[in-house]
Image 1: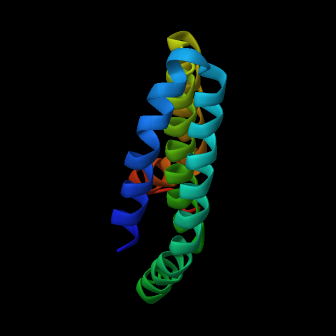
Image 2: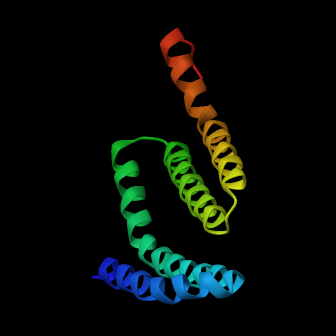
Length: 128
């Protein structure tokens, strides 16, 4: 299973990161970024069949593709925000991590705004 392999990679790289952090924190952060990049590439490769299945489900139900796009962009924003905030925390800056989390929350609201507008229109009886 890919998940177990990816988790194993992260756990195996944890020891060198912890050892490097004491003497050369910059290299520890670079190693962390490299492992995250490898995991991200593998996850993106695995995501393609998932995206096809989601598209098939949305198409079969008659729900507009725009709503699937909103869902996927929101999930992507949440994942990017989480990874970036964790990197900032690992780099020793809680303030930057908080700023990234705030920006991610605002981005999520911005992304789902068309969906919120459609819900309000539906509730008010307006036709889009």
